[in-house]
Amino acid sequence: MAAGRVIKELLRKKLAPQSSIPPLLSSFTIKQDQEGIGSAGMKSLRALALLGAGVSGLLSFGTIASADEAEHGLACPSYPWPHEGILSSYDHASIRRGHQVYQQVCASCHSMSLISYRDLVGVAFTEEEAKAMAAEIEVVDGPNDEGEMFTRPGKLSDRLPQPYANEQAARFANGGAYPPDLSLITKARHNGQNYVFSLLTGYREPPAGVSIRDGLHYNPYFPGGAIAMPKMLIDGAIEYEDGTPATESQMGKDVVTFLSWAAEPEMEERKLMGFKWIFVLSLALLQAAYYRRMKWSVLKSRKLVLDVVN
Amino acid sequence: MADEELVDPKNYLEERCKPKCVKFWIEYGKCVDRVKDDETGHKHCTGQYFDYWSCIDTCVAPKLFEKLK
Image 1 (cartoon, rainbow over the protein chains, first blue to last red):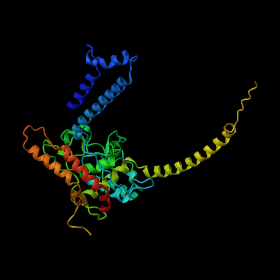
Image 2 (image 1 turned 45 degrees about the horizontal axis):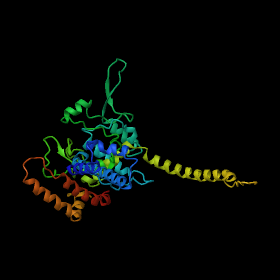
Image 3 (image 1 turned 135 degrees about the horizontal axis):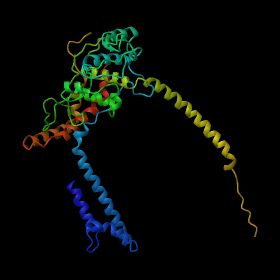
Image 4 (image 1 turned 120 degrees about the vertical axis):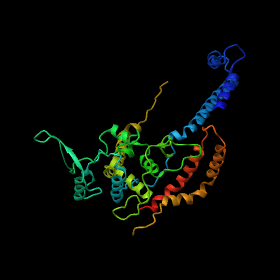
């Protein structure tokens, strides 16, 4: 950073003519006064100096940016998600497992208030299974004929339950940090799917010289490095219904697939529609191009003859 | 059937990728030695740490999902 400034000063001094004009203004006055003089040598020297000033400016930005590494968080790698191809669908067995991970590991702190039980039907559960899951929760329902609120078992139309009544309660229970709602989290974070997977499986020892205060945990992918959530995915923490070994990465992959589905349930239909309509529009483009060229051929094949009579 | 001993493929792959990233590991080690002697509390090795783990991540990522269901 200091080197950049020194270079800038040197260049400015080179630019300044042998007069008493302060160096700051010299670069501007040269442009206006010496336009008439403008010899090739002066012009190229000026151009070179300005280029050098620009480069040293960029270089100083470089040194500033690297100091913010921890603030941006470690860049996450790209994992080969099975549903990332142009015509690839979700792995629905993975969505089902991921829901189990959410239910047993995450739901105690994170809400998913935009997902209803009925959304799961046909995606990861049968209607009976979803009804049974919904019936396990208690829901407060609107005033009855006597004007009183009452609780009833959940139905398919109910949203997934919220662990806390409001944000303040959530913050109070989590040391001031708010566990975000996960309904749209993979769309709400840059490179969401890779980021969430890297975050969940990326709890490591902090680098030398970095200390995290009590109550926070080190995670290189989290901007700033200090996250309130402790490591939640631990080998064997849950037992999958289908017997898959519940390793940390397996749970991470499944829960991120579930969260991707929750954020983009329309993905499969969207890809099919996209593929179909891009194909149709390409044919339409070819047709339109042919038709345009056909109509314009009359004008494009005109010949103009200039007949000069002396 | 249910394994009594769960081995996370990610840890296994990270071990396998360490030799590829040994250059960054050495740089991190050098930084750790420099920082050890420092008492100002402002020096840290985040840069070298990030370089090392970035190398490991790009090595592990393409291979991990093949090992998962």
